[in-house]
Image (cartoon, rainbow, N blue to C red; front, side):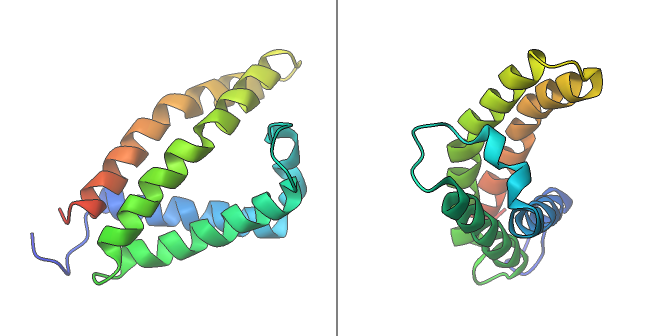
Length: 124
């Protein structure tokens, strides 16, 4: 594979980041409940993570920035995993079965996303 080609999993990751980043900016209140209490300035962190996701999405799509964006994507995915675990734990105490299942199902989906980010970081 040459430097300009992009795999479908990396394209999908860029799409996921683009949607998620947009949601962080348009509806930050959706993410407030999953912020750990120890995070200072949670709204700013939510908005900043949205900007980061949009930047990573764009970076993954361009051959010159794909490797750096791949490593940044790995860091972001690992960094937000605790918030995803918190969201799943909180959902289990609620009464919405779909939310319970969805938040749990989302956790193992991090692995193929990290794999795609590593593929981009390694130039594959």
